Every structure is written in C-alpha cells, then in structure tokens.
Length: 380
Image (cartoon, rainbow, N blue to C red; front, side):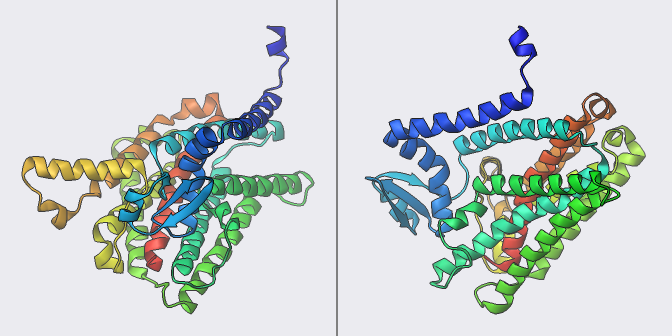
C-alpha cells in the first residue's frame, strides 16, 4: 500500500504511455501478419493510406499495399481491405486513447497549477476549429492527387493531418501554445495567458483558411459554395440561441453549471448535425456533389431512419425530407443533456476534470462538423 501511496500519478501515466507503445511495437514485430497487418494496418494505417490517396480502399497483401478506386474492385480484392473512415474497432480505440490522453492533460494541468475558467475554455475554441480545417487541407490534397495535380503535402507526411495522427499533432501544438503562454504569464510578460493562447490558435486557423482560400481561388476543381457555409453557421446559431432563450426562461437549472459555455457546446454539435444533414441529404442540390458518412453513429442513424420509412410504408419520404435529419436531433438532444449534467457540483468538486471533459465533448462535435462544413463549401 505504501508503494502506491508514494507513486507519482504523472510518472505512472508516462510509464503507461511509454509501456503501451513498447508493447504495441513488440507485438507488431513478433506477429507481423496478425498484429501489424491484421490489426494496426487494417483499422488504423490502412484507412489513413486510402484517405491520403483519395482511394476507395487500400489492400494489404504479401507485405505490399495497393490502392483501388471502385467499390467493385474493393469487394473483389484478395487481401486485407481498409476503407477511409472509421470502424467500430477504431472508434472504440480512439475513445480509449482520448480518455487516456485527457487523464494526462489533467495531470499536466495540476503540475502547472493552471486555474480553470470560462476564459480558458473559450481560448481553446480556435484550436477545435483548427483541427477540422487541417483535415480539409488533406481533403484538398487528395483531390489534387486524384486529378493528377501536384499536392500541397506529399505522402506519407500528409498522414500527420489525417486521423488518428492529427489528434496527436493538435495535442502537441495546443500543449506547446499552452506551456508557452503560461510561461510568459508567470514571467510577467502577459496580464493573463488566455487571450494569448486564443490568439495563437486563431493565427494558425487563419493561416489554414488562407491555404484553403488560395486553393479555391487558383484551382478550378476547388469550388466555393458560400450558401452551404451560411446555412450551417446561421442554422447552428439559431439553434444555440433558441436553446439559451428557452432554457433560461423555463429551465434555468440546465445552465447553472456551464453558464454561457453551454451555448458553445450546443452550437458546436449543431454545426456537426446540420453539416451532415445538408451534405448527406441535399449535397447534389446545394453543392452539386453527393456525400457519404464515415462515422459509425451517423451511418447507423441513416440506416435506421430508412428502415423505419420502409416499415411504415413511406419510402418516398427519403427523397422528400431526407434520412439524415434524426442525426441533428440526436446531436442537439445529447448536447443539451451534457450541459444539464454539468451542474455546479461537478465544477465545484473537480473543476479541472469538468472543464477538460467539457472541452473534449465540444471538440468531438465541432472538429468533424468544421471539416464537413468546409468540405462541402469547397465542393470536395
């Protein structure tokens, strides 16, 4: 018992992190076909490879990788097939890694003795948008590659802005900005570190937007559909405003813990929901292109809705009102529920954990929502 009492949680986390990497690498080397190809490549690197090359799938066989560009070729392929996007296995794995990394961040915040506040929460908002915007840079890259044009970023370096590696890139960049601004604050160079932290994220975000704007202005295959962008932003803003007005008047208890931070949670997840509905159901009408979902929950929601239409004998509703709209309802309801759960007691008992978890909840909605919105805005 004394051994565990004296154990430094931060060192234990670091040991677990290094140990996990060592065990994974050792297993991949010892069992290349089952672990390296059958698990790591199939669920993690393979989807990244296919995504980076704009392929329908990537096939691993005999130690070599082949990219295929049609569903029929992928179905007929002999080997381990990986498609861009997420699977149940990768989704669960990412969730576990996310929780583990959140614990690490929590321990770091304790070491740095950083005071959690709404200002800190809002300062991280540009970083959440940045993650999604960087993914769109990779989407532009893949579009250039598919058209035989020179890419912005070569392969495999482009993998750094593809899931799951972009999570580590964003984690490292955000952590570096946080440590730098906190250091300047404690040296007296800044009155508070939060504005400088937010500014660092905003500068990186504007630079990324500049790259996307340049691609749209100089390449004919990259379009610009401002109507889609406006519909998403205005729609999410209206939903968030209605949430705040109705909850403050009829159920103010919902916002007692989060205050105005809850507005951003609902707004971020509404962006994700609206972007999915518009792109999946109305992509051809709004941007001249059809889209498919890469997320497990979204795909399941669409399938269930279509099956419900058929069961009720209203198959025509799919063309009239679409089949992705329940995903928006699910996102909004889940966001409001989260805001309600984060009451004053949670923030009083463990403020660092509460703020960190709330940030993560916003990021998992706003990141994909930003990507989906910008992709459709650029017509890719």
